[in-house]
Length: 433
Image (cartoon, rainbow, N blue to C red):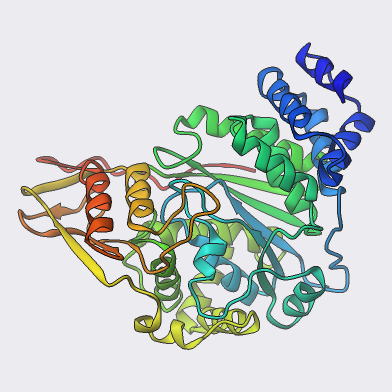
């Protein structure tokens, strides 16, 4: 391992055998954390070639078990988002695409910092299980067409170890390590194709579109090098997606969308864009646009919502909380934030709103922190909306007045009101196919 650290420190490329050694060592714990950390920092400083990234991803995916989904005849697809605020798209996307005839094995993660995690949102539903073994995942995919679960100790275990060390060593943003982490988990799912949602803006990993596009190109290129069909969409994350930020609140958002509510136009646009590509790549539509139209029809018919109910029930969740939003967790204390003057909402900074949600109790800054599933924000206004003085911009929910005060301190700096309406900005910025 010492030789491999020195090689990468000096800018030399690793062979496939060397990368397999590193992945196996990370999975087995046979190399000290300080040596793996040193190697990660060397990669962060020196980078990797595309062939190296491909082989590292393959080695990480092969470091444990893989799902074996060959018994399922329908095309198997998943979606991955690089993370944002209010980005509960997966909650609606998995059942929606499954209703279109695809199989969706969706391995998801938990929130950390200002971004939320799909698993945390799902666990806001009473009884719902996300810690499922591979033996438990297959029957649910067969009966429902979709299953949403966390990374197990046997699926891509090298990634579990390396991700923990990256988080602790300031190497999270290294492009080859980001790519290998994302794609190794997806490769372990036995997919036929993958759609990526690469966020751009204040609430995203990369605030600069050029850097986000570079990451997207590396993800797509590496996926193709692994034989996995892949498309990446760059989507805006300057303001939160949709109207809700918080775990139970984002469950409510997904339910409303699948029941035909069109008020959250940006959320719906991203949902249909990602889903349209999944349906197209899965051979159920001639084009992504046709795929989006198909999914709109499934929402209008109510079939997509029924599929969500089946998914939740299959994983042990209380379906009554979907049918009656009043049964979902909701923090007792609330505070309305009024517009200080009239005008147009010209800025709603996604990162600051996400940080406000964390202070309210909806997120965690360390993995050991507990969550208040009912905490968060309801955004009554979005960028471009006209507001009158005293009109409610957002409603904050927290456990007590102290939490509300902390959340308000952050949210107060998140918005701006201007005399002129801001120029309309697209939500889907670019597609890399």
